[in-house]
Length: 387
Image 1: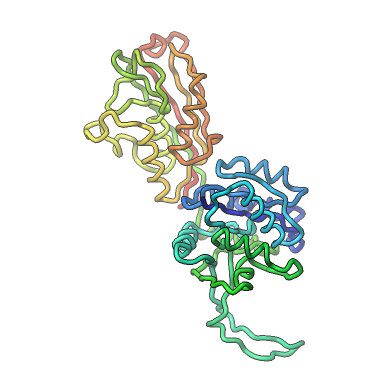
Image 2 (image 1 turned 135 degrees about the horizontal axis):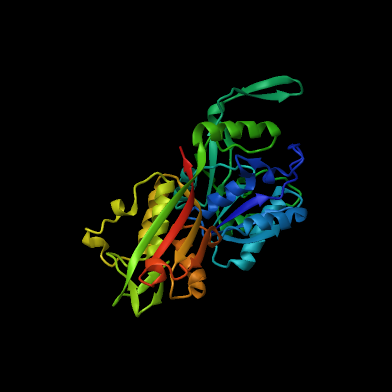
C-alpha cells in the first residue's frame, strides 16, 4: 500500500490575498485541487490523506471528499514537521500495510505525472527519493553585509516535493528526531540519522506558491504549456429488443427474458457514453475503434470497451470531468439499478462515481420506444483537454 500525504496546514502568512492560498482560484479551481487530482490519478498511489489547519478542516473535507482515494482529512500541527508527524501517526494507526509514503506540499499545484513516475521508479532501490533542480544562478555565502565566498553551484540543488520514503524508515526517524530542531523538509530527518537520500530530476514548473507574485508565474505556465479547456461531447445509441438475449445496461444485467440486439453485448448506455467521451476528445465514433465487422468484439463487454477508451484519453492527457446519461426504456423501471450502473461506468472511466449521472425515462407510449421495441440512450460528456 502506497499512501500520499498532502500538506495543507500552513498559515500562508506571506500570501496576502485575503484567502488561504490552498483555496485560491488558479485557472478555474482551488490550488489544492491540483494535488488531489494528481494523486487521485497516480497509478502507484493507493490512497491519500490531507492535513489541514483546524479552522479549515470542514472546508478542506468538502473538497477532498469528492475524490475516491481520499482516506481522511486530519488536523495539522504548529510546524510543517508536526503536521507530517501527525499524518504518519495516523497512517500507522489506520493503514497497517503502508509500504511507501509520499509527502507533498499542496502549495505546489503542478508536479507532472512524469515526475511521479521518476520518483516511484527510483524508490524501488532507494528508501528516500526527492526531486531536485540545479541552480542557474551564481551562489554566494554572506557574512553580514559582505560576501564571504562563492559556492560551487554544481553541488548545490533546490529541493521540491513530492518526496517519497519507505514508511517505516520515515516514521522511525520522526519518532526519534529532536522536537526542538527545525526541519524544513522530510529528507532532512533521513539525512540527520545518516541515511542516504537519492535525487531525481525535478521540474522547473513545479513552483511553490509562497507569494502573490507566484500566482502570475503559474498562470503564465498554464496558458503557455497546458492550454487546458473543458470540451463537451454528445453520444446516442439505440438497439432493437429481441428475445434470446440478455439486456445489459451500464454493465448491469437488467433482464434475462429479452435483450438488445447487437454485435457486442449491445450495452446502449456504455455505447452512448463512449461516443460522448470520444466526441469531447475530438476523436471518431465508437464504430471506428470497435467495428461490428471485427470478430474480436463479438459479445464483448462494453464496460471493457469503455475502459479501453479511458486509456486512449489518458494517453492524450485528456480527463473526463463529468458524464450525464438519459436512458429511454418503456417496460422496466431502472431506478434499482442506477447506482450500480454509475459505479461500473465511473470505475471504467477512472473517475469518482459522483462525476457520473444517470436518469431513466419512458417515451410515454409513443413510437418504437413507447411500444417496447427498443432502448435508446442519450449521453453528454465533459472532458478536460490539453491543446
